[in-house]
Length: 305
Ligand code: R5P
Image 1: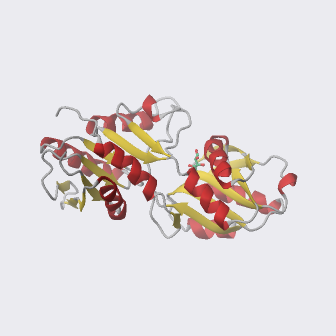
Image 2: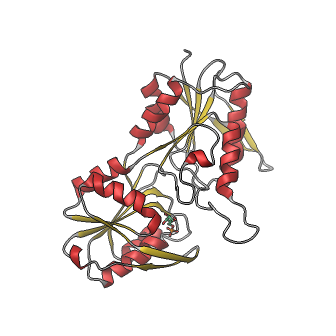
Image 3: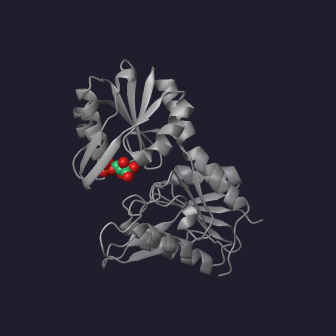
């Protein structure tokens, strides 16, 4: 088999190296730029003919990234790559997974069709599966969801004395329960109602059994930070202190300083994984992503061009 090639784009150099090391291939940065009119230029930095290829991309804040991503995948295929995969530790456009109001686009399904048309396989970490039970419901290509829970649970177990893991809403149960199991800790989930992008209510169950434990709020995504902020304020009101906030995907998307807001609401510590790289990325999940991607690259599911 020709040497696999991993093309890094948008801050994935270390991840691309890890994948290349795992499969005995090469990692090279993809060349992109914007023309003065806002259109994208993309150049593959080396020959891809006959080689299994993967694009390793960080796709949070995705809109400006989609066109160059599709151009790169198409160019690789056209230039003879032996299959083209996508490695995106954070999979965007998973939260609009239903039509909540008449006429709304179900962007999770549309985005999945777009990616499935351009790539042969996909590797990601903890996609936001709520109303879609599995990626295979919307992705037409082999799509592997790596689980961060074992690594996150190990971090909690090593770093936090007597934790109680708390999932802030019903859909967080899948992550919170797996993390709690890996940490050897109990867990509870809360009930959240969302009224808008930055407006939520959260109801707690009776927490008296857990007084004296360190609350560890665990969610898949921290975006505007509203969910965590409301949960933190209620925890303080209930008399808990020293709360730790753990997110798999630390998007922290909204203007303004989400970290400061969460600290002001009672967080003692905020930690996220490396799926979205930033100053709070203290839990490294590159290894599990690299291992999964290497498996695909070593036995590339191919399609004819
Ligand atoms: C909800 O469906 C997700 O699991 C997260 O709870 C949500 O995305 C967090 O968003 P935000 O930080 O904006 O409250």
